Image (cartoon, rainbow, N blue to C red; front, top):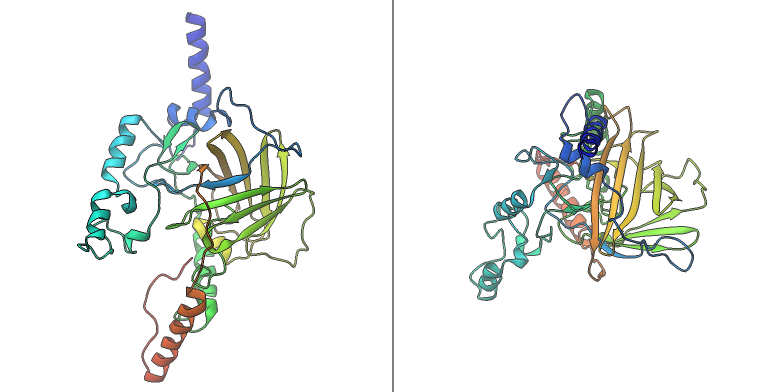
Length: 356
């Protein structure tokens, strides 16, 4: 009995040491959660007729968990009691709050913020109604390394990102279409990745597999990322919005490496890459209800270390066609307003943040 206890303690200590970073301590509980098996114990990964592990279906990462860790959380994982407390104090998905729904039906609320503190019409927001469970543990952030749960920008990386934003947004933001965000122009949102991100709503993605390709389709703006499994890269001169993705199988895990992303897209979802940067993703069926999604961001010019994240993609709902009107009507009005200000001699600069 003593021998087993000693071995367990040594193993736990070694696990914690392996994930320790000098800048921030990793707790043994967090380290164990990160290193837990990619597949639920006893679960047999289903396979398609073509022999590949079955990742197909609609999956959602809608959750109150976000990429970086909020200041109120000091660790990656929460106990059940801590989770229940966090859910109580966090504004919930307003569509699941029956009291507000009833007031809306009775005409007593106008559908604006509903005291949720959000700047967008809260009735339409669909962030999820709880924090995420990843490999059986409640998570306070998707980022697992560094232990702080924050993006590890270097000083040089912050400078490079700021310079890139100036190039992409040289004027007031009302001068020409290239100064508006990709989402506003209905071109692409960060939801299909890489890495797969979150948005205010429409957090569903559909995965479709074939012997030679995997397609990751996002409900948000109907973007589809096509991943080749034959190892062929596109010509260097081609820079797709979502990069050049090549995938392969490592056991039951689909690994995707993406390079050559357009700079405008790499500002999405907190990720900025320079030439030579890359994103590595891993998809593994954890159980019938969840895919474990992991990604790593590599770019020594921007970050002080390779940073890593773990995310849960859970059984989603039916995907619907997304009609993005901003790029069809809103942009015309935005630019027309800018030209009207020019004629009046009024400054177009609102002083706001026009980053992705």
